[in-house]
Image 1 (cartoon, rainbow, N blue to C red):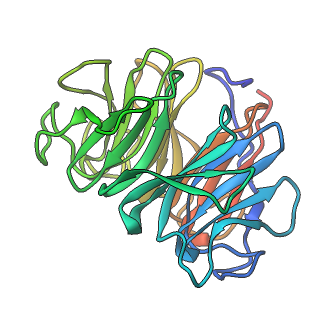
Image 2: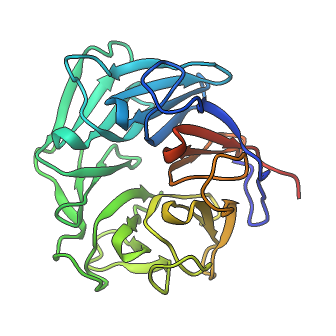
Length: 300
């Protein structure tokens, strides 16, 4: 990605999926949450939670296509996150309503494999060894499943609900970096914590003074991702903005949004999912506006 510490994004976004009001028609979304991109095919995959489906939206398309779910058989129940597995050409879906994680082959979407059961899942991440990480917002922990394992291992939290470094409170989305450090959106503690590989406690790397709307605060943070410079990007859902925290610096800064909740091109309403394409353009699932927004990378 063409991203540096000084990169800016154009403040007016453009709608690349949904944006036609809440609904189940193919040109509409209902509370989109997790998103992921396949740059090779120029496709966005969206956990369209309110419609119990995952849809794909090709760049420039006026409507999406249902990949899985969204039918009377209720194949999915409230999907909240979706991960594109390039190596296996499949989607991994966190299906919160059915308390499970499923794999769907993009070659044959009718084939679903349940890979984890009985988990109140929220966020997904995968490392370079194809180990899968899943947040359990009910048990306030993150588990790792190595390839082929039947039982996961707790790698963050798992010490009850709380604010101590070894605890989490309703963890939602997660990110794993190349050093196998885990970043957790510790939502009800209004912070992002970093857990080194094999650590028994995390450190707070963003959100340092509790819940609020100042640049040091979050309000219900959701998706967290890391760029190659080591900077954090966070969907600060309750404050209707996307934040950036430069590595080892504080406070954060507003990337886009932060202009109150609304439907204007420079506004967001409860953003949840964020991702970048290869050019460094930013995509945001603007959940309460039932759309996905694209913010083009700017010129300094």
